[in-house]
Image: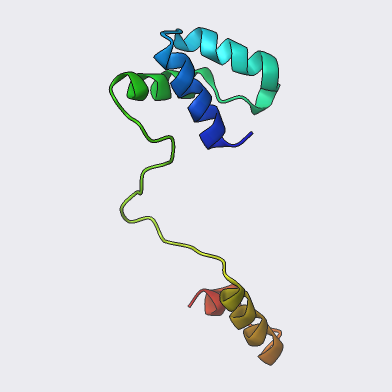
Length: 93
């Protein structure tokens, strides 16, 4: 189960007025160590009670945008084929 699926579950259970500790206990019973920590469940439950709708992460300013595409992969392969000793710093540029 990914983060967004856990958050959706938290959102639904919060809408049913279930306390975060019980939501966490349910998730932990079902998913064990894969379940989010209690603090995370509490934080998301609070945000949903305050009116948050989205379960996706918000964009964070200053965070680098990374995207893996077949074009990017091909460019890196070409660089490595041209020079197998190329450094990671050169690949980042």
